[in-house]
Image (tube, rainbow, N blue to C red):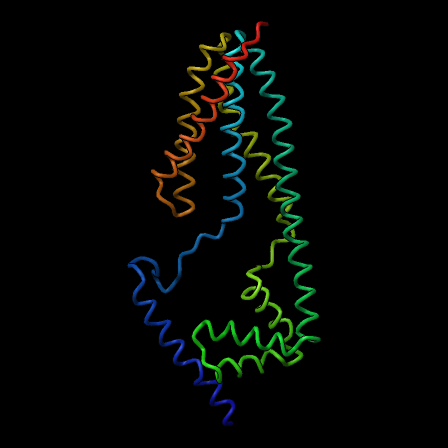
Length: 263
């Protein structure tokens, strides 16, 4: 009974301090007793990667070719070939990255599962250190560790160590294929936008002028959306994304002027 009472009242000091911290949160963070969190971080990250490269790389390539070639037809052919290769390459990169993340997590989890059985003392010390960093005193941390040591709680102990010792969260087993599709498709979609003027305007340099306006607008809107979804400053994100795209395109254009190709 004494132990159960200790378990019941031990966290009071911690919860009290946490409630005090909640009172310091800005108005609107908690509404209707529900916390507001954005849960699509991985998808947004993949789409951001694909769209950023898609809007920038083909745009820069088309600008460079327009500075060296007269016909828009050659620009379109070259950029479509790059889009196909680029989207496949980006998608494959996303798939490999997702697979590596899953394999790394599984490997580290097996190590932790072995350590909580065969290196108990070391794991206890590490767990105690982590809990005390969160404000628990030695007695409170010891009670939690004793609970973790029960055979039926070993999985929870491993979960705890994975999260708070190694800073690893279990990845989605399907994340590899999801990342591949999101990155590849967003790269292809983003890369088509700068090419639209070249499809309808036969003179490459004339098409480049319209492509610049279309792409700058797309980069700006994309930057706004990215900033809004990620909780960053929307205008800062928009101007930053636009500046990177323009800088890449200008560099490619002026380099192409130095090595002009006569068709």
